[in-house]
Image (cartoon, rainbow, N blue to C red; front, side, top):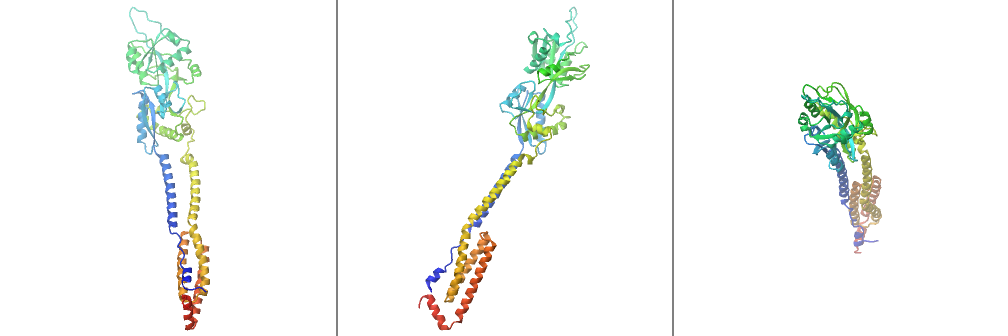
Length: 471
């Protein structure tokens, strides 16, 4: 039987389990939660923050620029507006188209009869324009024979034709019309002048006929018509009867009618002509959700602006057919066709993958937590084995001092075991098994202490001497 220092050393308390495990697990859990919340907040911010789109439009002081400026102000004043507009002034539709092609603008106002950039997709039709070709009334001159009156486009050969506007597109439009009627453009004299000089040029009789392109009721065309009136006579608008043939040969143009009285008292009755559109186009790579939001806002405020700015009422939805002259942007088509995606539709894949990531993170966190508790579980297993060994030691003990040391160690084992249970390192079943072993230990100590107490005094002294190694 062992005794003295050997027994004391054998029943010395075992090392305590790590107390930092719970703090580590808490830190990991909080870090994971903060990361998830940060990702969710960032995703919501980027999804809902206003997007500023640069709109290439020109020239300066044009109606197109005024429309865009009015829309930009309305967008800025609109609550919960997802889109902001920043006008990017250019020299005209050609420059605007180039800005879009070069990626310097997100949106652009372009003419449908010009070269459309390959990366342009229609968002809306800003307005429809009609070609107005007219002849002023013959001037009364004494002693001079009046020139033959022009009543048909075919009679323009050899005449001077004034083109209102600086853009080459209007000249190209005139040439298309002349060619359709068999008139060689090289056989006419084309005189081009800015819109602000049109009235003076017409009064000065610088041409025999004039052409202008713009919306019905255009102020520029109306002023030119008024300047053409002289000596009580009114100008004559030449009908473009072959408008449908022109439209077939040139898809950018359409057949249209000029209603009677569109320009003051002119024409007296409906006249056939060709038309083309000004479009709001977007870059092909622009986000579908962004374009859909812009289209939705555009048409939601269009009616509200028509009283303040009548040109806004002329904005129309784009042609979403596959054979459209300018294909519609998918975002605009989704709005027009009622297929615009909701927030969940757009981000359902991200949400699903996010949930999968959270599940993976949870599994990884559980594994990591279990890994952190491995040492505690192993240590608790050794403590339980030690407690079982202490039961046998208690039954062989020969002195109360030995039992006191065993009891002290059992108390320490109990404290460590309860800490492991609180940390989740052991399950309730393991705790029950430990309680059974602890109860058996207490019974063994109590039985041995009662036995030692019942011994005669001389035997008790002999047992104490043996226990201390002095016998």
